[in-house]
Image 1 (tube, one colour):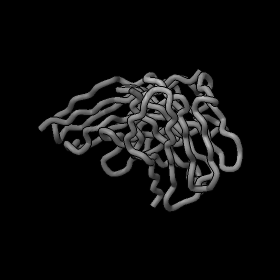
Image 2 (cartoon, rainbow over the protein chains, first blue to last red; image 1 turned 90 degrees about the vertical axis):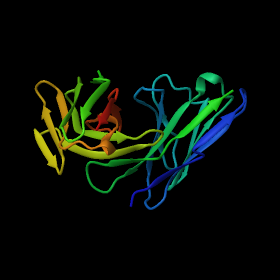
Image 3 (spheres, chains in turn yellow, cyan; image 1 turned 135 degrees about the vertical axis):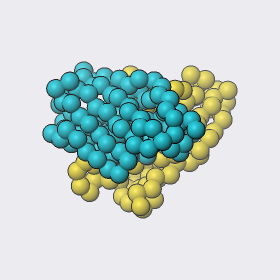
Amino acid sequence: GAVVSQHPSRVICKSGTSVKIECRSLDFQATTMFWYRQFPKKSLMLMATSNEGSKATYEQGVEKDKFLINHASLTLSTLTVTSAHPEDSSFYICSAQLAATLPYEQYFGPGTRLTVT
Amino acid sequence: GEDVEQSLFLSVREGDSSVINCTYTDSSSTYLYWYKQEPGAGLQLLTYIFSNMDMKQDQRLTVLLNKKDKHLSLRIADTQTGDSAIYFCAESMYNTDKLIFGTGTRLQVFP
């Protein structure tokens, strides 16, 4: 149980275009999902916390107008990278929180590799 | 502040024990976690420890926590080639769901 999927797994887009990444909790409901960015051989950097039915909470230094997050249902959160540039190329990972018992475990998706040309 | 450090690389022979270390700076963390990431994949939770414990054992995994020194370690007994991956420690802060991840340790197991 507690499976999280991401789509697409890999995407290449041209500079200036937008790309949407989906994160789905397949067998549980998640009121809270998280979006991370991972640079090569680096740790995961939390970008934002996505809450179902409300606005996302962005970490310091993350542009909310560039990285649009929508959490419209209890099983789906989307991250849209708008007007993508080559420096946005990265591995984006989402997680969904299972708030059943403490600690509230985060289950991670397999990641999406974005390449902006 | 929130700063979690790990050594970058560890190489061990198959069958030996591996010890991966992690230091953190924020004493208000409530849970500390170990995650495993295989190439091109997401993170898999291996184990976690509550901050008022000093040890937890789960099959081949032993977690040691020294809260005074803010030091966390993961020991993998009888390390196998399938254990080769990047290991991240992470801490969750009091009264928040956020996880702060360490820099990751790449474990390489050779025959």
